[in-house]
Length: 265
Image 1: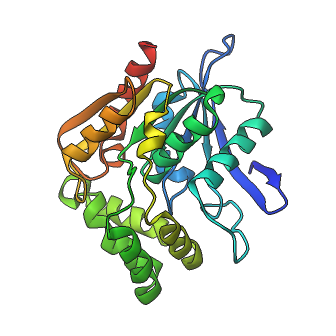
Image 2 (image 1 turned 30 degrees about the vertical axis):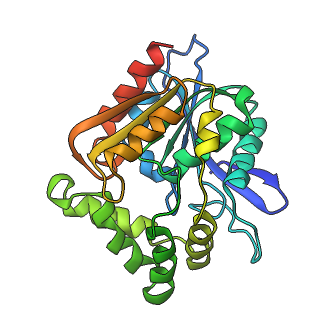
């Protein structure tokens, strides 16, 4: 299994898939998962994207198979962005198309302003930019009280509609999230509370695609359209009749939408 030793306290797990024509030199797409998830959540995107691009997936610090930092580590969006830069340096990737889901999309927006020279485009899937929703603080307390798996199962009602995607998928999703360290769940959610990236979004200068469901509990369409207004020249695609995290419930459609967006660049 490929690990990159990026610092004394971080061995980052990553995967590379490339099924492009072998005589070509493909550009690279990097997929950044959200909080309490891993590379595994991109399973339906990779077969579609990897026929056209080299696709890199990573497990962010403290998540999946990557190193859990020691107690006292100061979590931040800038820290996650710096970790991503270190991985790109390790893989000798100068510029990439960056795709992030939920908090992974928030990290992608932070990365695009901190390291604009490393980004060809960003795609942001169901991502928050203002962490004032009580959900984040409540999540930390719920996990402390009832455990990570109980919190993950409770959170499914915001993420997926079981009647549309099937209960087996919902259970798999919750169980995968349930593998996250309790300390990581609590500390990352606490660290997110109060962040407002409005100024960060205004400074994004690369082509940006925003993907959203029509119905996202906790986020109105006005919230998503505010993101579109804040990011200069961004393109918003709302999938009609969809619920929750559209990049998980409609992954094939999202991946094809991304490919169409990239063809226009």
